[in-house]
Length: 278
Image 1 (cartoon, rainbow, N blue to C red):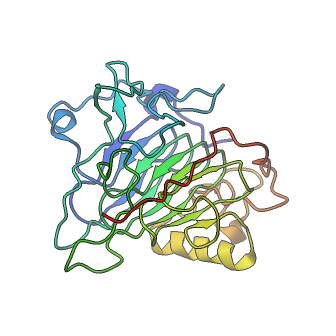
Image 2 (image 1 turned 120 degrees about the vertical axis):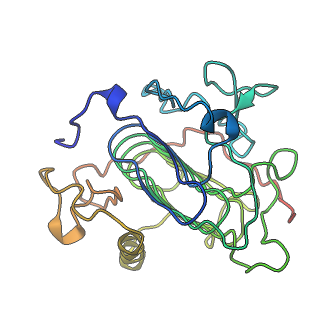
């Protein structure tokens, strides 16, 4: 694929949107992207040594991801691996501050195995090509296991925390936190859908591809700042579909050459926590 044009160490980006409405594009590489402001410890000491997410192609897991506690606030050791006790904040953690105007971010992971975090506000996030983790949780400190349902603060619009997430190609982990969040991807249990309420059913989770859903994702991507020519140089990309499935969406349809995201689940089945509103 011609889009692999840089050495691995030069592609893995760390991006923070900070305050306001942001349009963030990872491009190629295993990127760590947050729509929120960096925590002080990372803001004051900016450093990217490359491969910060430590994606393992053998397990398709990131070093900081714990599949047995996917909604828990991520804490890591000095090597960037998750810990269940102690540790320091993961570089994509954030302060869940409520502002008069929510930070509504549009985030595209694109090519690579990306970890995307929206933060507080109404965010639209697209994983693209690769095994992505997309966390739409607006408050990583809600409840003992961070399994409470996030609801809008008093006096704010009911949809203050409502996000839309599309995983795209690859084995993805999609995490919701409010009943208004929407998680979109295909093929049953191949991907992991993590929600604080019921683990199955339409509404928050949509696992099915049809013409209406495909059109919705495409139009949402375009209105969110999609680079409609990102996959133009890849043989087999369809210009009528904005060069998908090799574009920023990673929008795979049945019959595409990379339509192989099927199989048994990798992660444990998420239990129904019966999350409560906070």
